[in-house]
Amino acid sequence: MRALVTGGTAGIGAACVTRLAADGHAVAFTGRDAGRGTEVAARTGATFLPADIADRAAADAAVADAAEVLGGLDAVVANAGVLSRDLLTVIGEADFRRLLETNLTSQFRTARAAWPHLVAAGGGSIAVIGSDTSFRGSHRCPAYSVMKAGSVMLAEMLAANGAPHGIRANAICPGNTLPGMAGDDPSRWPPTPGGTQVAAEDVAACVAWLASEEGRHVNGASIRIDAAVGAALILAPSAPAPPGP
Image 1 (cartoon, helix red, strand yellow):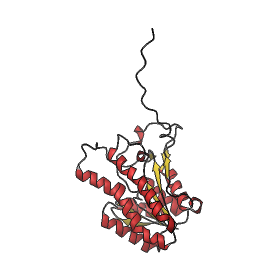
Image 2 (image 1 turned 60 degrees about the vertical axis):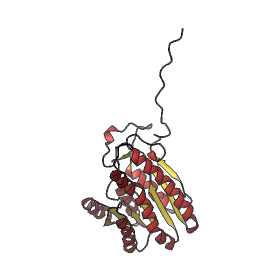
Image 3 (image 1 turned 90 degrees about the vertical axis):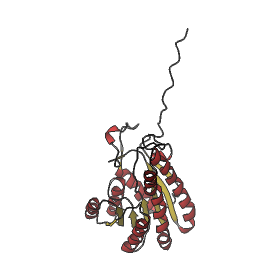
């Protein structure tokens, strides 16, 4: 299998590169940090393609370069993402556009650029990395929540369009995931119902399974990997009832 991972220099992206390479697949990955990219490439044997995936021309070029280096594409992991804590009512226009380009538009552009390569391969897997905030927005990252909700619908529409070509698209929606994104602090995360936190390697395992023959019938799904945090969400209790007579 020939796979491209965007945002593959750290966190979930680096874990996906590591897992896919360890499974014996040919892997290329993008990232902005040349130092981290070089380290991941040396450790995994994957090909590092320096690129800011929020740059539209760079995104298209990275897919073309990956297909050339790997001899085609069978799988795409649209992972690149950035956080912002700003409220929607105060975030600047430029910052909002930057987040949109990275968190959602880049996923669309990566999938679109990879499409002819996947068709030529007779099908393949697109894993769109969403978030638990795709389903319930987080007050800690409102703009990110809005865009990750779009990631889920993007995966569903890609699945519908790709099914006749053997292309499968699914949204993987992690909750808080170690080691955490830039700007996040794992020490402040609340405990999960089971007492353990999700790790990037857990998400990578799901990516690998979806791209494998075992995942061939999973298409258009949204898979939440959050250690049951969403399922066990408890609303704030109401005010206590006044004492009886």
